Image (tube, rainbow, N blue to C red):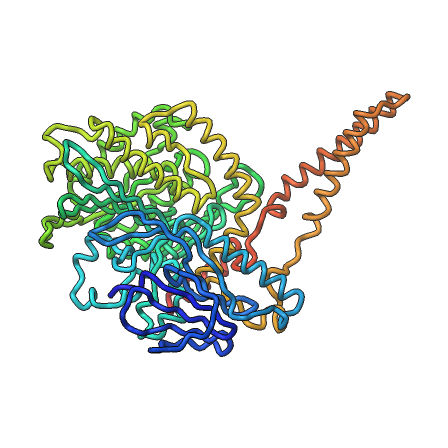
Length: 602
């Protein structure tokens, strides 16, 4: 059941009227800005109002000032999947139910502005996608295995809640079944639909990455697994091939190493990894039970370093897999940086890994459906790939696996001649590489704040000087964002997804988390550093008649500058941008045991 794809929003002093433009039915969604009641009315009279065209309702979120209606004001067409239009959100608008903020205290007004900025920041993160007639949250294979009753359900009800990013803020609408045509599920991740040509045969190459809403966050603030078995940066990526209404699909997943570990930012380029000593095998097993249930047999490809703290993670991970004795899991370890070099100059050695995975690719098969709906083959297993961030190295390997599968599909459909390789088709090979590199960049921006590293390997099949230069630049930007802006980004996601709920009387009855105070070191040490550095420069630049006195001053202020800078580095965690809403600290042993016991009981 489709969602309205064209709407007119009428704004009056007391109400929002949302009028469908694509329906002959005289149903108008009326939102009372005073009573906050939401209803569907037929033949409702709309008084004089401010009118604007919108393309969907993103949802309703409650902040200190009250509810805000979020609407989609601009969109651009990405393409079509199975004949259904797919759109990318390019702009949104937040509309407050309240006409003023005079009912708030000064502190509440400040907090409300911060909350609005947090929501707007999350909305501006690329990329959000929707379709009013097609379920983007499910793979082709999952959709083919559904019943007629499932297909007749409203779009928001049958959407996979793991990948519905506006699930929380849609709740006020979804609670009323009659409003289902106004409930638009939105996907966050990446979609590209590329018309392609090989041997004068036209087909569509489609790439969909679905970012999970469970245990979502930024690079250093959210790592590992939680007590529910959900992992950080979990993404399901589906590659679709459409040719003359015959459809092929192949799915892969990525996700953080599924044990309890953390890596809090502290101004160091690579913060120390901490592995919780109280890791529970049942939580680890819960994650893979979900994986097997959703995707079938698991081939776990681990790309982390063998040395250092990454090596400790690898040993813990492999030990858990060994102890689980699960016949539906196979572990494949490949030290990407050791084999290919830290800069990836020996990228050709990835062929070693691909040779090891050949049998798995063949055994897993892929989904294929004829134009009459007959299913010719199904995917029976999946690759679950990870590196430390599940970004750069992971994307390179996923693109290589997907290319092998696509090669088989194109040959099966007769698009490629027998013995012909994708790499021989220069135009399509370029398209394919860029689709996967674009996917890498978007996934990286959403988790780490910058474009991906090593995308020159994906785009051009080799390491380039420009690629190395861009990796250095992106690494520098990552450092600053991860230390000085990711707390804000983390809060924006926690607020948007409902991990933190703003209470109506926040800031009056109970204190707001936004008003938390910093430690004295945060204010004092930087001031000392600035003053000492300034005085040192003054002593150097302004000559003194007594050189020994001048040198003494330079030495004193230089030492003060060095010591204050060293103090900033030593107490680095005090100076990073810390989340305020859901400030998940490292689990202590007691808290960890309590969390696991609670999960078991429930």
